[in-house]
Length: 350
Image 1: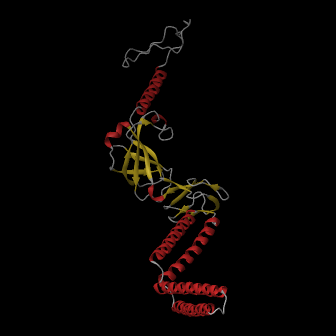
Image 2 (image 1 turned 30 degrees about the vertical axis):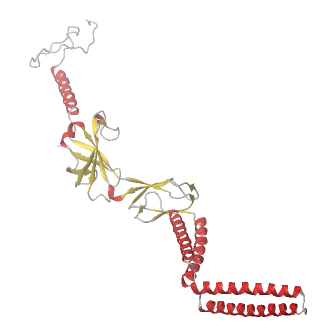
């Protein structure tokens, strides 16, 4: 007869050393529990307990990936992109042209300023050299002519005055002679002034003003040349194009991100260090880093250990480690130029 309880309930001995297996009273006598079946269950239970004990042990290694510093390549000027010379994943060298923007306006302004600068420099050189011999001779001849004209005007005025005294001439003739004398005197003084300026050369104030104008135009030329250079974007360091964000035909503003560049010589291992091993690590410590697919380890130097613990990211370790507290750690790697970003790494714990 059955007692109505679960048939899986078996009265086990109080001590594992007791060999007899006593069947539950609810089981009929014709279905006794065999000793070999009970031992099989005990063996399976022992294996489960051992596996659980192993899973509770602390990890023997810290895991992570190879990472690189990523540089943002930004536009320095406003303009239309006319050419993108690289593609995603392409290696580049420092100083290599990456993006070219339209430069028509800057080139026109630069040509105008360069023409004005050439004219200002020519004017300054003439002022610094002074007058030529031909100019001095011409000024002397003009003065001689003005003086001769003045002598003639004086004689004419005197003669007209004598004729008027003899009542042989009218008053208007004398007035005309006086006016001609005044004109001749003014021309003689102007010729003297012109000769003096020709012989003395330009004033120092005029030369300084011309020099300032030349310096101003030179500064403007340099500014336009700098603006023209900003329309071309070059790689600042050796690396690999991580991603291209802007393409030909797009108009960008200053500061817009054009692409991202993964620097070649900055590979490092980003490792998640268990909290139980934090006391054995310190910045500057030398250690070996094992990369997946390599038989030999790379030498590394701990360069950064996070001051705050965090839970392990879901992608960093195996499943049973994801709930543990870890410290983000960065390890600089030697001979890291050919390493591929994202490669899994492992660091043995002490």
